[in-house]
Image: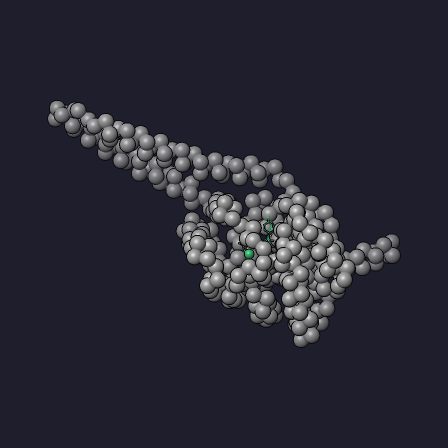
Length: 329
Ligand code: UDP
Ligand code: MG
């Protein structure tokens, strides 16, 4: 029999697109199951990330009307995109053979799923969905996103260029992912660290179907800083480098001051003093900030708080399993 695929779709205030996403996903599933690509046990799981609108009600409706297609996970509160994805993956990791994560807004091309499953059948444990074009993004979004990937690479975090969170992972990889316990979660950085055979599938990213982006610039910057400081200590090394350079420069300055004094023109400029005070002060504060960023991270990690709390999981396979277990005892 074909393998079981669970789609994990995080949703935060997505009432505007959810029904459309569900109907397109269902169509895809009907075709995939019909062609024997995936087993009829496969499900589409929507993870409600503490939405304030009717997202969860819609998910419940979808599940009640078509339990053979739709399942839902309700998180106790908004935990953020990455945690919502993780919550979904960890909830289904024992009942699926493979899982694909995808955004709810239909920006990722549903038709790339076929190619992903083909790669999986060829023995790949991870298949990355990679954007081949960013035509429909605004110039600003494209520019910031591309700078982000370049900067991440330069800072030593090994991420797949132009790949977001549209990816297939096998059950095996999901089990290993469970071992990464960090609170500051950055899946794009972690998945390549797990290893195993992987492949890329290219697709064109389209515009958000409806609703607004939940990633305003502020969140995007926070995401970038989190990504870098979670995966690389290069910024700390950079500080050491700058410190070293500054010491060299100041040594030269001291020699220069001495020479000037000896030659007798010791009326040194006020401006150069002011400039160096500001310059060094600025660098020191920046350095402290970067170090603080890492300390804050350590603080969050040491507490080891749960990354998400699942309030409810509605899934007919799970229900059946529970009933069977009760019968057995
Ligand atoms: N999302 C989430 N929790 C959040 C923010 C976003 O689960 O706190 C979901 C959102 O519903 C969507 C996906 O994460 O399915 C990506 O968000 P969005 O499309 O707003 O980001 P963008 O594509 O603009 O980067
Ligand atoms: Mg989007």
